Image (tube, rainbow, N blue to C red; front, side):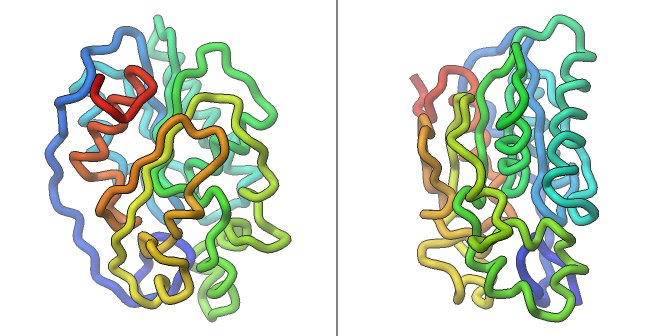
Length: 245
């Protein structure tokens, strides 16, 4: 049995190839740091291509690794987000701290900043976030091995009473969302509203207050490693829009 990203028990063999760095968006930033937060059952390695793309564009980067399967969101949020902020501040003269998140990472940022402020708060780009919960988490939660694969967070990302995303309000920070509409997992997609990325329906990524929104042709597992997404991220961090202007 192989483990793949969150919510589901399937057998899969996935290989991550090298990605180019999409280095064609905004000009070089000065004194800006980006915290990268990976998704459930992933690691900071999954965000390395994004880290390289941002570093080559002049950003400081804090690519945070956290034990996503070991603790609930209430513990993970201060641990992961707080660690990223501290790493950014250790770079010295920083005038903005941005966040780029994949899946669960976006929920951690929302949870943390529901009760915390940051004077240097910049912009946030959420990639494939389950902002309205995911039907997959509800449909598959009783399958054998689900808790082992996903940990306590796996029960907090659905649409039922335990849903953390549905308890959170509209973020006070400036944010945008990128969703994927391709799937490599027909088992999970069968319980999701189309279009979906194999883990989250496009409609469930959306959130009131978003400044921009874009759908790209990608599955959930690889959306953070696409050249197109690198450019969208850098554009939004640079001037608050996915468009290159």
